[in-house]
Image (spheres, rainbow over the protein chains, first blue to last red):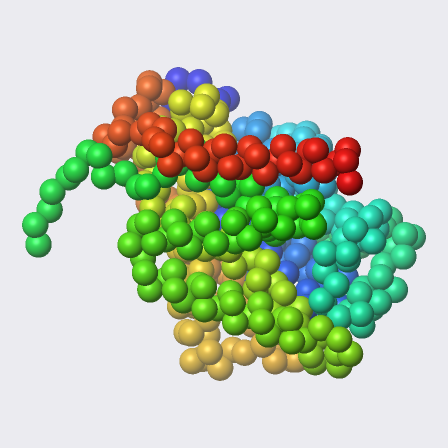
Length: 194
Length: 239
């Protein structure tokens, strides 16, 4: 490790581990999207739940690039899991912004960490683009969900909900990040894991 | 038990082909791109993973996958009109199964049949940066671990009576999440140590003990995937 600013294997492995944890949590939560109201509330629950692992992850981040890689991987995972590529595009951009925010806090500041988490979490919001901008196409292939379900979801998601969901996502990201830091303090710092 | 190492003992397909196939499958089966024009390709992509499982002699899993798939497909056909709310939820579940199962089977096949070093070597030959390949291989390795750990923690918490009730929801989440992250971070430390001993940090070119090369079947699958995308691309212009 002659060059301290380059990402070494340990950093990359950390990225992999926390991405895996977040991906499993996302999957577990996304399963509840079967109920129409939960489909909309995913944008609330995913940021709230992944906050804890994410804040833990941020304590390991000391170099440029880790948050970005994690966001790219999460976006790619969303794509493979059947959402569209929007999450990858938005996630990558959000990753760069979050990276810069966290760097502005010197990779230490907890407040900046919470903000970075809230920003990087908006890939979750990007998953709804398909419903907002291409609703016909989105449901054309999902006809056998039953018309009730389709009506319920489209009624809950008119176009003006798009910015509302973004705000909801960021606010929940802030709350999730705050819960995450609380948890870190309560459990992990005492135990000496952080 | 006798142990011997056969250097040619790689799986039926090359890691690169597997990734291309996974990508194709997620675009056309899960993402449902192209719809009607792609029907033939769709069905090939649905049953290809099972053939791959058979190629690896995983008969049981393969047959189970076919049974589940055909079962839920037929049930989905039966549940198409005039659904009540409950039936609609059921239909949705069946739909998700028929969409995701082929890709899940494929992903499972890839994880089971690809060795991490094989994957890293193949990616290195494609000049993909370490910064992507190492996290991806860790995810492959770690995904089952996370699920396993969370199952064990879930059991322990149920035994203590920490359930997802209305009152204790926050507590229930906290008591599951914290041990999960703690144990995962410890496993992560061990993984980093293991990677260190395997020379992942040396920065020189790594050699791989298994032979990696494109074989006849790889070319077939690759050409098939490309044809899928070309057919889709043509479909954009000529409906």
